[in-house]
Amino acid sequence: FPPQPPSKSLLHKIISGFIQDTSPSQFIEAGCVVCGRLTPFRNLIPLSEIKDRLK
Image (cartoon, rainbow, N blue to C red):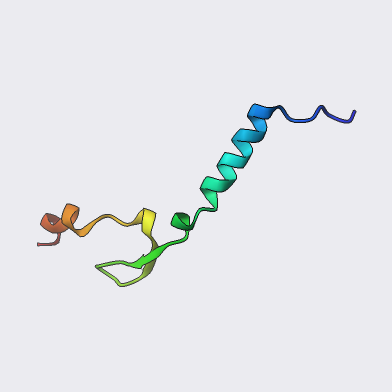
């Protein structure tokens, strides 16, 4: 005790994960075409991919 300091590779993994998780693209929202609800952009499906299902 105390534990050893983290290795450089572990620090790199932690920092890279934080940067990826907090990047602006993770917070962009857009309205759903069907219901208009504001939804994270990463969870939306482009309308061109589901047009046939809406007929």
